[in-house]
Length: 488
Image (cartoon, rainbow, N blue to C red; front, side, top):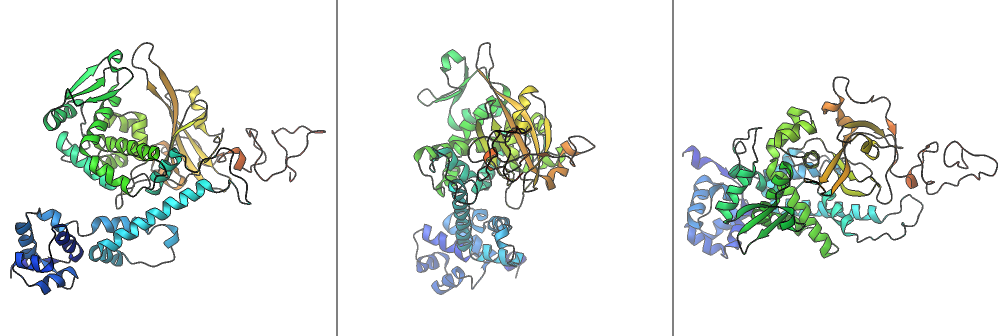
């Protein structure tokens, strides 16, 4: 017996799904493959292995790609389950890696069911956190709070999946490999150029890319005109924004199936929330095309998460790069988990991504002692800061201002601040903490989530007393801090 014939795998569930997709009975498949119906039943129950010879016979008979038929041997399910089982709720259960692999390979349907249930559990936990009182003791929800807020709905959707969509990453990377120099070889010098996008639109979609002035675009940065087979792009966009808009349109055209699949298991309370999630996934796919996962993951290690250097390497903006580092949680290839927040000078939060367990304020403002609220005084400069929460947890923050809009005289510009950070135990891997750079780790800034839920009594920056604390009257004494408390 040859080596090829001797090799065998168990793929009963995949074989059963294939048969059902083809609309065949076991007897039909047996006749097609020239084997007995009981043997097909044994194969589907994993009581017999599928030999290499049988794989070839299946591929020839049903015109199926051999790689698609053999699958990945359960590697994807195994990696995803290993990632999920790191959750503290499973910490007291001893689950050998071999058992996880056996389940993923032999029972992929059960593995997928488990993963979907866990994702649903995570979404419900996040939804409960949104609806829960700000502190224990039954404090009321803030006035005007809407449990079905579409923005909060999308944030829960992303957070439950740790802001990572592995199948979308893989599809985007394949697309990048088909278009750009360096992507096919995994070279760190991948070049996602506008010329590559333009050629793809021309060859694959018969679309001409045209750059038009703002007065013609009438407020649009990108507009797809299928009637004239044109993709119109505003001509004042900077290089990073131009590539991103081209990539976003390509994602809508070529990754629509993958985006739809990622949305399928989301339980959105409104159509608006679903549309916002679809927009978020299209932007995710665009970034994944420009910064392919495997190449970008190698680059962050080589650059020690130097966001400005990474932005130059990939021709992206600081914000695009910072956003991308929050998505590097592909099961089996995880990098440092980061959070990201974007605020305007008034403190309004317009982007919030949490993969690092940072306790963002669900309602109201954030802590004014956090540097992200003060860096408007030093535009375009990196400001790093160690943060310590009232419960003792520490985080490392990297903040900088970013600009949207502009591009011509009189055009509206919007200044915002970005903060991206990680838990203290990961900070040593960042270039910002090496060789004596950055702030002193032994003197972190004591911050709170928000004044209404922060119980630091001596904070001079406090804007409101915390829920559940009684303040002292100031009839006879004025305190050096905004509020004195009865327990002081």
